[in-house]
Image 1 (cartoon, protein in one colour):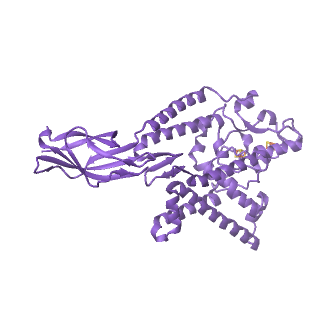
Image 2 (image 1 turned 90 degrees about the horizontal axis):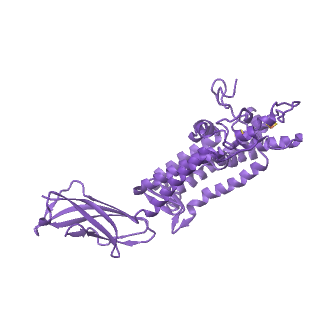
Image 3 (image 1 turned 120 degrees about the vertical axis):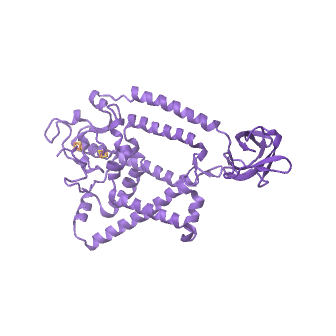
Length: 449
Ligand code: SF4
Ligand code: SF4
């Protein structure tokens, strides 16, 4: 059977073949471990870091409010968010075209949690790959029950901790503290969500594992179109390594150590494969083999197909230059729209279901709903004036002060003298003032007889 016939972790009947990866050791694994501490610290700390009283990042989908590094986006900023999203997607494409799956190996939360948290606990409790294999295949002894119970209990606790960390990103610290400190019946939906997501995380890291990368992740499946012969990926130097074998002229002694350490179970010597998450474990393992055989390291290394074929890798080519140019334009447009957006966002609409009222003082009145989003970090005292006609506005509540980063909703009545109206539907324009300064205008319609 060729490795291209079916995923390496499935047998001929399509059943799961468990990958018993050997614990990686070496320079790259140490670097990745240190880097993963920073990522984990970032994930936990971000919701607690505050800028002007707001979290550094908040993805409040229910409240339709997003805070990204101090910049606040409301539902009305969908266009700006879409620009940011497009820039991010293009950045990922550019990054992947140039550096392959660097993200997967170094920064993806799935890899960080699986390789740097859950698998390390597994190595600690059950030992390295051979011991784990023997434990799994052996009978249910007291030792096996104890080890499996301890491992899964810790996995469950970490899954709950992970869920709470992600909840902090989506609901913020205040709501999260309320969720964990107040009676469960007051937050039944939040508590149920937390349990379901925790159960999902536990299932992923205890059982499903590397299949997320090899079968589910859409980013992994896009590699076929994103990577080219100039992309820097974890590569086997076939020019140096072949012909492989213990007594051949190639540097590869065919010890299969690089395969034993691979968390997705593949053989990097078969070339670029979508299962390869560029975790660098095989680089470390092969380097230690090269050291013991007296050969120079780097038989498996970060390099491009062009680099291996021609002896030197060139990062820049027409493709990533074009992506960079488009990304620069798109991101500049995003920055421009971000900094030129109005400080408040006002929506004024006639109250649905109501027409007009004829008043004894010869005025016609309409009732309006007004929504104002204050996007500044200051409390804003506001005032609404009618710019297009002589008329009078009566607000439902006298105080029109909108807190910083808050949304204001109210109702008001607009009175216009009958003789000022020329048709049954007139366009009217309002001005929103703060401290006598016009900061936004808003148009809507006024109906009359
Ligand atoms: S670890 Fe290195 S020497 Fe051993 S099989 Fe893999 S590529 Fe060949
Ligand atoms: S082939 Fe190497 S870099 Fe790719 S997933 Fe396996 S061990 Fe990691």
